[in-house]
Length: 180
Image 1 (cartoon, rainbow, N blue to C red):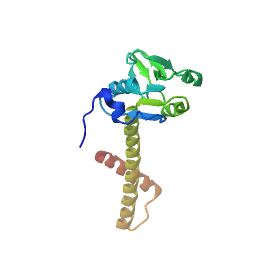
Image 2: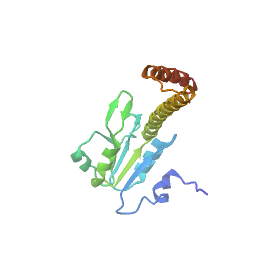
Image 3: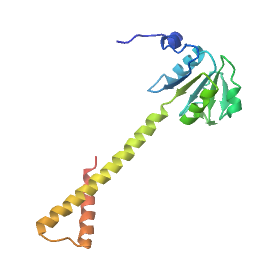
Image 4: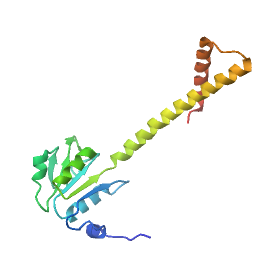
């Protein structure tokens, strides 16, 4: 069961209004993250940073004070009940977000950090592709090893290095037709 809540009561509904608690809020998913980021920024009390770990439109700061790759002194300058936007830099029409580790370092200075974090999904997809390629390579090598073992048993002799190399090349060529 779920409950529909309005954006104006988001902080209260999520119990993010408790005094003395700090929050790191990561927003992920398809659509609505920037709207939610700003809704939380308006409602959270204390010193609040809004940022991204990916790219977002450089015009999406909603007239907030915007800091570019700030040092600790700039973070300390955030006043109570102020919400600021922080980006690493702006390139053309895009604001480039900060690294995740940077967000973690801000907690000794502010009460809340709200992050548009969908860049992590792309990183996970890339990691899956890398692992898939490694697995396919291991499978290919295992198939080659098994093929050689079977061939040796069939012809009842040990295959020479030259024959072995030829069999491997032919097997890999044939296996390319069966890639996932």
